[in-house]
Amino acid sequence: MSNPESKRRVLVIDDSESIHRDFRRVLCPEPIKGRDELDLLEEELFGEEPSRSSIPGALEFELDSAFQGEEGLAKVEQALAGGKPYAVTFLDYRMPPGWNGVQTLRHLWKVDPSMPVVFCSAYSDYSWEELRREFGELHRLVELKKPFNGKELRRLALELAGLHDGSAPH
Image 1 (cartoon, rainbow, N blue to C red):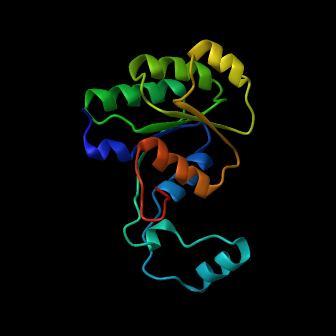
Image 2 (cartoon, rainbow, N blue to C red):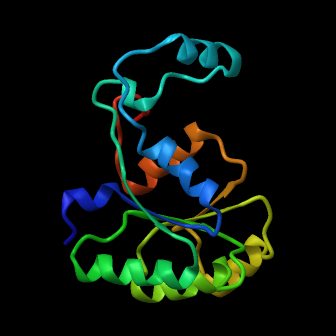
């Protein structure tokens, strides 16, 4: 049985450093002491809500990064061996020169068949019908289009990890 902290563990497998920064910004925001003029201007210009870390009691995630499928598989195996499995994995479709997302998913679900996976990409080389034929029922597989919306990313992470924070609908 996994410990409660495992519910907050998220793995991102993507070959783009900027995508990892985006995930970290949304799921592991830096605490802020107060809102300064720049924060207020940004909110006014972009319509963004204050950072989750400025909301008391906001849930943060423990985020690990892998830049290729093989590296991601090794992290999943290590997490399972250590009794701290990932609650959800966000996986890119295309990660040259290594395994693509579907190849990576095949390996991931061999070692952790119950782990929810979110495919993240601006495009896919596979239709959902092709994925369904190979993997069966896709209740553990979700798709999130890039560029992603931070609120949607956070909602998916909370939902798939089985968590709720004070601002998420129950």
